[in-house]
Image (cartoon, rainbow, N blue to C red; front, side, top):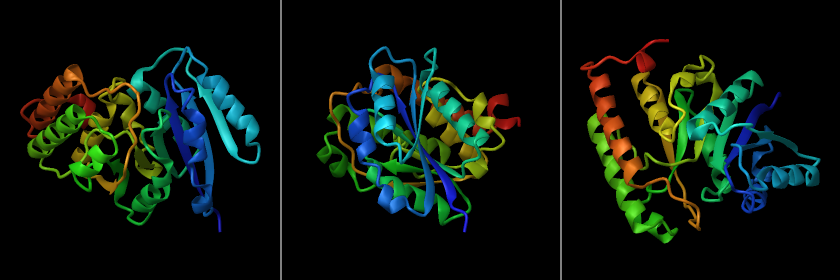
Length: 256
């Protein structure tokens, strides 16, 4: 039986000192039924991220590891789009995205894969820090302001779009590449709101996104959930409501 191809892509920007600890947590033993490749993808960092990733590759020659560096900073969304195009071009079946800063634990990779492989109608799955309630997230070290903002913005997203997510801001995703071959995601933003637009596009196309509960660890990484991002998220969600109800038109979300 031919094993399904899985790519774990670790997106990084100035995350050199966390890469090794993230890689070591990948549960290879629980992924034996898959043909696993790890991609370290760096978005033009000026630190030692590429040097550390290359060192990890050299020290693990028995594993399939790819190291790629963007010559110019593509932005969060642009970086993800480049990785997704690579996945499609290389004909992987499934993909897992985690961040190189260590916030999302790779131990949940098998659970994420199970959530998209056991149901053919699931296009993507995410790791939710709030699936088991706010106490679980705060116990993991999520700052109060970030926790409160996440809860409020997720509730607004759910209310306006008639969905029921628990964490609309997670950066841990699993993708079923069968749903990505059309490459419509390339029309989405290259900014930090890529995940938000990707989620909305899946809602419009009736592609199911599931969630699994995860715990996270917060260190000194920079949070993206600040006032500017929160306002941007709110107004973008409002525009989604108008688009979904056909009050305004959007070629980005409705044209092939």
